[in-house]
Image (cartoon, rainbow, N blue to C red; front, side):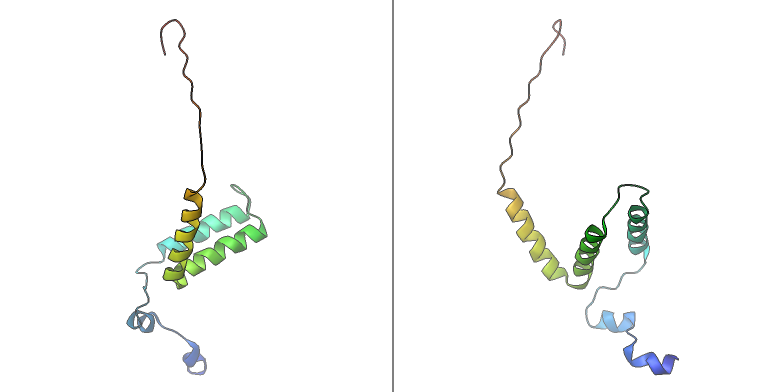
Length: 98
């Protein structure tokens, strides 16, 4: 079995030599999968199928192509800083105390 599929098996060592960041543990992945599981099983806020696919695609891009992800994030944040936001605050006291 292994000999048959060996050409298509990528090892972490090969990825590390090519400069790909290899995580030392799978804890972040396990934590993320737990979060996805909870949201899909409606234990917390519920995600739609489309929303889940969008989140997973975004996470895959972040992992597989960090430069592209960073450029996307920079563009997104730049757009959001152009939005104006205002707020009014009023404080009233009763009997001289706040």
